[in-house]
Length: 129
Image 1 (cartoon, rainbow, N blue to C red):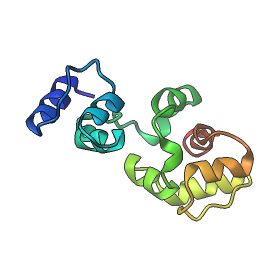
Image 2 (cartoon, rainbow, N blue to C red; image 1 turned 60 degrees about the vertical axis):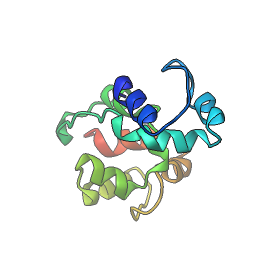
Image 3 (cartoon, rainbow, N blue to C red; image 1 turned 45 degrees about the vertical axis):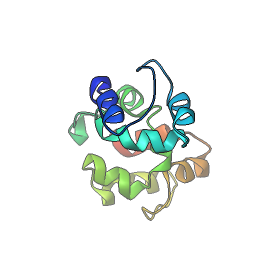
């Protein structure tokens, strides 16, 4: 996240806080709102992962790019659209691994079917086997 832009945005919206070292929770408490409300105001300054061609993904790259990014909350359709990966190809790769997907399930729901993590589901989808 571009910290300078995020701080400037919060200040321009009248948020009270000491500086960028304060957590979103602390800023939220000072301003009588939830941390998620504060985050939504600055989310637009989050750096987006660089586009990588679908054939370039490795298991390590999938881990590096998507671990801890909240991908489990996205549906398969949302994820494929965001990174420009063909949905039909994603469904075929998941079916090959024994998971039937419609695209409306979250990555976490798909992961639970195989008792793996959402990032493991991404590896099945993105890493050519």
